[in-house]
Image (cartoon, rainbow, N blue to C red; front, side, top):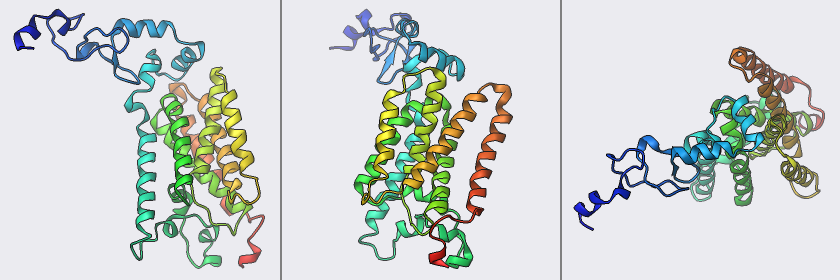
Length: 301
């Protein structure tokens, strides 16, 4: 095809702006659209008319989510744009890089990534371990014991994060993740003091908890989430599975609490109250580390 034949073809111009050439087609109606007429969808772009039709066909839950969480009326096509899940993607990448460093440590002497980052409650009590390393409360969420461990946790992060982060917003999603990870560590310190743990399970269960609360608040059908969450909770109690159910429980409770706070302080004039309540959750988690452990402490002192 020659350049003249391209310019002579009206299909190579935006259907709304006939003077603008474009190579992009609407993913629904396949008409040519210029950058001004493009709306990012989950795959590709859609035109304004298809966007309008999609808004009209949204479910009641989607309409409530857009109205209550201040995400406008863009519908699913906007919510799942690449920029709306940047925190989830960053967490995914960081965890993957840390796991690759763990694998590299198998052949590089002295590169003990898991030993540096895992959470072992005595590291918070200098009189027991002879050192104080509080960063492990969070860093344990980025190291894993094996391929299946990291793979299943990252799959769960992707499944929950792609729905939850567009609803909450990036900083609220990150806050939920980190507070839930800390909550999981706090539960381990209280209920299994002598147990070293690794993995993002506490943070993942926190996201599940937040999603359940937010989903119910929006009137969404949460049956599938209940089933998945129930199965994972039960697996944690099976003997021989070597799973820290304490971290699951702690993360779930904290995540649900954060979700409850976010649903009750969603208006712009409640931002200060929201931040204050989230800080209170963080303070409660810190206080939990000051409570004498229920099990395991006596064997190490």
